[in-house]
Length: 304
Image (cartoon, rainbow, N blue to C red; front, side):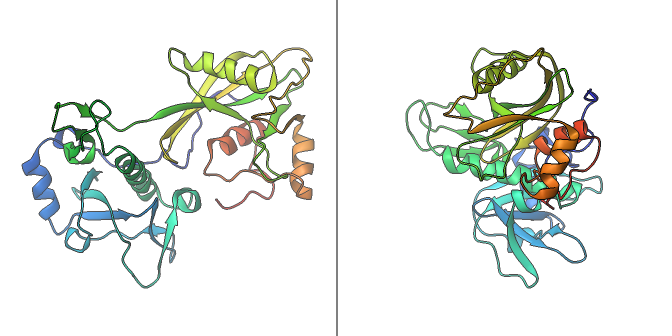
């Protein structure tokens, strides 16, 4: 049986800052924070930021006067009173630093830095794809310290988009887990099922529908275990476990599932030991759900 307590560690859900949302509309406060030489800025370019790796992975954070010109996004304030911003622009050349994206460093960075890059990448993705008003097509301007875009023509406000997606570990009466492979995946990749929530649908309904659509199984005992942002480009992953009864044959949807199979712990370990199946990295909520069922770190688990 799967432990249904909340997941204790999710790589992209570890932010430690106070987002100081009430200060976003206080232009004087935001301007003063930007002028403070102690303020720090994370620069992102196409989803990547500069990272140093010695003595341990850490974001390169710049003072405001060294940040590239452009819109700034208030990310939060730490317990010491240091304020953090994000902005999009060319990454500077800094000795010992290399550009890296969330997939590579999201699980390696400390709690503060993981939260900073996740927040900044999410805002960069949204701003880059929502520059025009969906009502009238006019170009929008940034407001609320980067968390709103306003149309100058009709005054409408537009907020960062988040697409909820459910991801679920399904077990059967023999306490096996279901793993599947998408048509576009390498032959050695398997994961648990996932899908986007549809309009007018609860999260539990989305879990049941996606499992039914993708592999033809009815499920019950749907339990929520945790969530993390996945700004690649704009999702929120909501993790669940669910049960299926009896011996209902798997009927994979060929458009979404290349193949699907049940695994015992021994079968999963053997497949990973031989390299027939590659474990997902710790960045994903899928890995955390599988490890919760497995009871330990997965064999040959990649670093990210």
